Image (cartoon, rainbow, N blue to C red; front, top):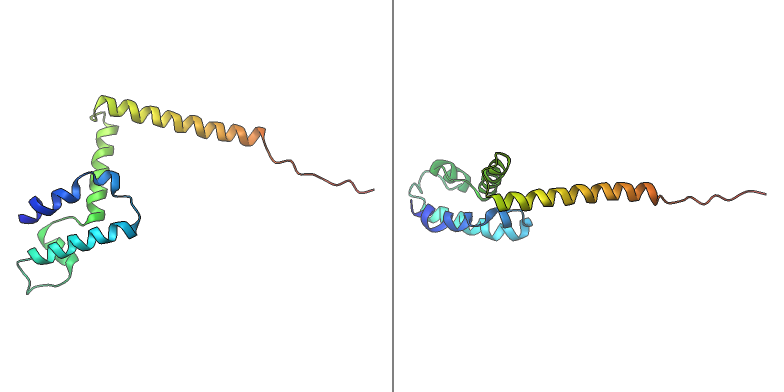
Length: 121
């Protein structure tokens, strides 16, 4: 289908990096994708709702496409199918986050706010 070759391929490109952007940034992209879907719809007489068109054509909407790509990425990572270098980077990042969280817990214990009490005479 024309949609897959011209539009969907560009929407999928690095969606795991930009797919969590604020909705104000994703909305214009979604509008363009919806317009393209309406233009390419051959059954114009049947429906005018773009969500129905997506379902009829069996095409994922932007948020669903993002969820699919992230799920595929996480599956590859958890089953050790991702590239070795990426696994090393993610593991070191995970270790850094763990150390940082432990340090913040330690800091909270060591540097608790002291409540100053006044002694009444």
